[in-house]
Length: 116
Length: 112
Image 1 (tube, rainbow over the protein chains, first blue to last red):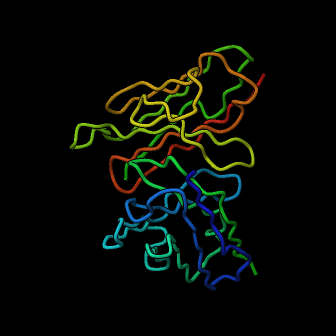
Image 2 (image 1 turned 90 degrees about the vertical axis):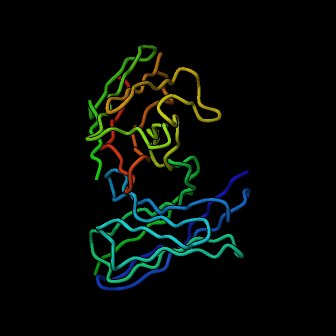
């Protein structure tokens, strides 16, 4: 059974940093592109970043470029999102998702709240 | 970026009646490999999104056959043949053809 479990969310002050993790199991992690998708409270879905199977290619949404960095550790079956210079508008539930030209599998999400 | 526009944004439906959601993209979603990477997701209250349909019309595993997808190019439709109580939630279309991936605004389905 495919499982994606996010962790690392919490309350952080504006300008602060946070690192999200996603633990993958039930499939061969190193064979898939992976993404982070977020959802602000009461709002729609927004793709944030994705990373190639071997980590050699990474893409970030314009809204987070230069502040967020996606990475992965295939030996640990883990996906990460390093978030710096956080803003109030980054407040959201962050999901990791397995890519297949779409997202068949999603985690349960981890809530990031940026507030003073 | 490709803009995905859904309509309606709110959809009150009587139990047992059909429902239809439209999704239009700002450019063709036909990929160079010939596939059209248009997905539909359901998000029930308090849950993660669940994919219903991939590549326009392919139902994902475990999705009831009352859900169907159709369309081509820039115009797509999700249909529910007979709405059930468990179908309440928000439905999103999403394109995976062009980077960055983009979602529609969401359509909230409720029971009348």
